[in-house]
Length: 108
Image (tube, rainbow, N blue to C red; front, side, top):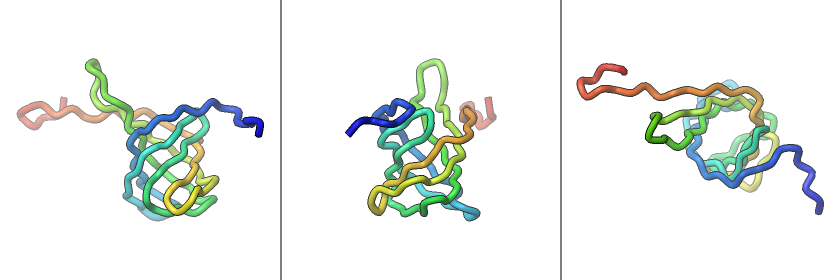
């Protein structure tokens, strides 16, 4: 079979938090199995319906220079692979930097 994807996929296992599925809050976690500029394959342990809009966060690895960075994404479920894996588009996104907290409890 010839690969017909327009975007290269990368085998990346990154933490995912699904915060909204459809019009309801979701609040469950999983991880990416692969990721491209157009979407992700997510393993979550939870079923999400095809066609459902989702809001999700992908947590990127922290570096010595920066704290945790999360990618806030909006997309649509386009495929289910079994009971707990689903493919979701990456239609809109924004980078969200975690707020650092000083030892005294103040935001930095």
